[in-house]
Every structure is written in structure tokens, then in C-alpha cells.
Image 1 (tube, rainbow, N blue to C red):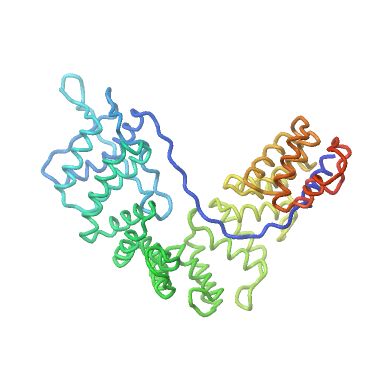
Image 2 (cartoon, rainbow, N blue to C red):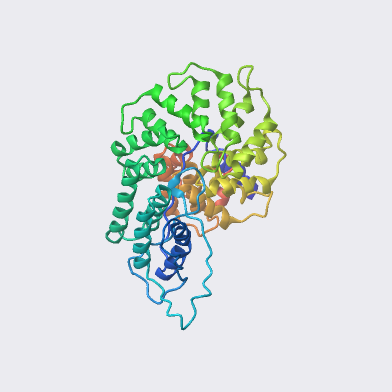
Length: 453
């Protein structure tokens, strides 16, 4: 019975188009003040050590615990740098010797506010732009989890430092300040700062300046300027810029003449430098080698699978979904392997792919692995909540006949209506049927899960 359900609900949809997807962001979760303060002090100790080496002030050690915590201290420290944006940068952790802080030494553990004030005073005395920029970045990032009223003074202090450094021509400060403006969004102020930092060979700023020129953010659209800054970023080995130039050459966009050979070169360079933030060239090359292009990009499906695997390892959902299909249906020379297919579908599902969620639902209704109606229901619901019409139809079917849950004809009708509103023909037929909703055994074979994919 499960194999019939899987083989039928799949026929309700069409094949998934393989497109590149965008990137997302996540918000940090606030933690207890003491935990925040301890983590903050560990990270700021590196700033302290740098300041001490550049001033006449003696090195000051900061304790790791405090009996009193400021209620307005910033929250979770900035995340570990991963990717190319300086806004994700965190300060290195330096371990200091605290043996001298023993009872009887009259050692006082400073509050966060006093420590921050001390660091600010010493940062200003160093006249070292990189140290001041690190401190400003830290203040801004660590204040993000605070309520708006409490974070305002920290944000103002950070932006004040960054503006001063930007006027002095410090590229990293210009770029970070531009990111702050862009997040509001205020591209009128962000764009000129991106351009200024790019002129100082700041690779990420060059890429962002190119995006502004291409999309008209804070400036008039200018394809030639966009290409100019994309090439600047590409020469500095930015994978996103190389990927964009590769597409422009292959498709003849951004005012460039079509040049498949140059486009292929840019895509290959981007693939070599791929990161979790910029895995797109790996997937694009995989698509091109699936079918080949002209006499320049040859057809090689085994190479496509390798490229998809590299992109999937970086968490790229379209590549992971494509591999899930390959190991489910024996595409591209892959042998059918249920567990490998589920592995790649799961990667894509965790990145938010509704199609992958629905594919997992279908697997749990088959005979290749141990059937599990509850898991099938779970993944179908996740896909349906993301707006996938065929998953909404499946949820209606599950509610109608009682798969992984008790029967509920009213809820079934609700799911069918959602699917029908998106043009799902099977859902429309179920709603228009003159007969009442029935038991599982009487469901027509044309609406089983296998037909939905």
C-alpha cells in the first residue's frame, strides 16, 4: 500500500527547475548577562593586549567572572568570521595569566561599562586605525541583541568611531560603515563608502559597489561601471564577482558580448574559490556539464555529480536536491541508493527547500526503507507550510484517509482548497467531486504520492 501511495502522490507535480537560490541571515539569541559578559571579556582581551603594547599604560587584565553585571551590557558576541563580509568578523581570543588576582591583592573586577570606557580611552590614545576599527566593530556587533533603547548609545559610539576612521581613509571602516547604512537600508550613504573602500582595494567593497551599479542602489544603473567593479573584485579573487562575470559572458548580459570561453574560465575560477556564501559557480558548472554547451563546455555527467557534491558539502540546497534526485532515480550515472538520496535531500531540506521536504515525505511512504507515516506527515507539512501546492494536496489526502494522523475531513478540505488556489488540478478535482470524502482504500490511484513529483 505504501508503495502505491508513494508512486501516485508524486505524479501530481512537475519537475523541479534547477535555479540558484539566494542567501539568508539569522538573528542571534540573547543569553544571560553574566554569560554575555564573560564571553565579551574573553574576546576584548585581545584588544586590551594590543592597546597595552602601543601605549605607555600598563597591561590591565580583566577577570572572567563578576558578581555584578550591567543590565545594559551588550549581548552575544559577534559570530565567528565565515565568509567574506567584515560585518561577521570577531576578535581573536587571547588568554591572559590571572595568577596575580588572588585574595589579599586588592584586585577589583571591573564592570562591563567601566571596562568598555577604559578600552575606549586607550583606543583613542593609540591612534591606530585598525585597533579602533576592531573596537568599533565589536561594540556594534555585540549590541545587536539589546533592546532598541539600550543599544542606541553603543551604536552611536561605534558609528562615531567608524565615521572618524572613514574620513581618514581607512578602507575597512569605510566598508563596515557602508554595511551599517545598507542594512537600514540607506544606500544613498552606503554607496559612496563602498566606492571609496573599493578604491583602496577592499575586495568585498568592490563587489558591493558593483552590485549597487548593477541594481541602481544609491546611484543610477550603470552596466559598464558594474563590470568595472566586478572585474576589480574578481582580480582580488572574490568568488561572487567571478561567478557574476561568468554568467555575464555566457549569456551576454551587463553589456558584454557573449563569450562562452571567457565565461567558463570565470566560473572555474569561482568554483575553485567557492565558499558557503558563494557556492553558485559549482552548481552552474554542474548544470552546464550535464548537457554541454557549444564546443567549449563538454558534456560530462560524472563531473557534474562531483561539482554538485562539492556544492552540497558547502550547504547549497539546489545541488543537494539535484543529488537527491540522482540517487533516487539513477540519474547522471548514479546507482539508486535510498540512504544517500535521503542524506542529500535532508541537506536541502535543512536549507529551506520545500521540494526536498516533500521528497523526504515520499521516501517514508515507500518500501525501500522502513515506512514511517509520522515522518512522512511531518515532512509533507513542512513543505506545505512553505507553500508547495502538491504538498498541500498531500496534506489534504493524509487528513482525508488518516495517514500518520486521525481522519479529519474538514481539515482535508482546507488543505485541498489551499492547493486548488495555486492551480493544483488534483485538489480541484477532489473539491469538485460529488462524492463525499472517503476512506483510504477507496482513494483513486491517480492521487498517490508518487505522482506528485
